[in-house]
Amino acid sequence: DAMVIQNPRYQVTQFGKPVTLSCSQTLNHNVMYWYQQKSSQAPKLLFHYYDKDFNNEADTPDNFQSRRPNTSFCFLDIRSPGLGDAAMYLCATSGTGGNKNIQYFGAGTRLSVL
Amino acid sequence: RKEVEQDPGPFNVPEGATVAFNCTYSNSASQSFFWYRQDCRKEPKLLMSVYSSGNEDGRFTAQLNRASQYISLLIRDSKLSDSATYLCVVIANTGGFKTIFGAGTRLFVKA
Image 1 (cartoon, chains in turn yellow, brown):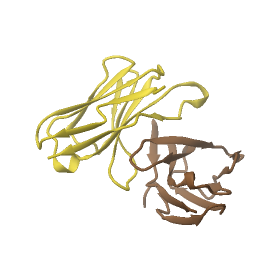
Image 2 (spheres, chains in turn brown, blue):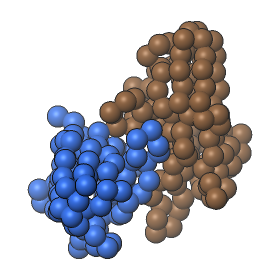
Image 3 (cartoon, helix red, strand yellow):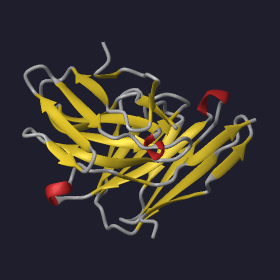
Image 4 (spheres, helix red, strand yellow):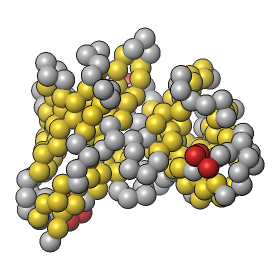
């Protein structure tokens, strides 16, 4: 059973047209992450939530925003997608306890920008 | 210098071969270490955590050398299904916990 679910799996948007990607989890983990991964590159952390506390990476463009309305859901908003934003977007979660640093990933949303 | 560096490969090995990957990290405050596996166009999945004492899971052995700041992954008796990209992940405490992925090492196991 999928524990970290991302929707949609594939998203096509137009240059400059806002798009929202969603992530939900059934693990009740308190930390949720958004990564951007381009072909043959490492996943790049955009930001993460520790409960409701938002932590932005210093080099994440302002074009990327996030919302976490409750424990289970987290959204990635791209306000004005550019061609360079075409990538796989991965959501991950991690919990507390002995395995607190282990991250569990969703299947990703592949974003195309036309 | 990248914070986490891996040989990108690809490593092309025959079935049954033993293959080893190394990963170096620059932050001496790094605390947790993992190997993830990522299949083509799929999400990363945890392969194993890496402990100071070293750990083994079936055909896979991971080791950590804090003095030299590298971790390794050894795969014995390679299977076709081991073909994937192996990502080294380091978590450093830099005033807050920071997760850093290596770019991955690609492995192709051939019949």
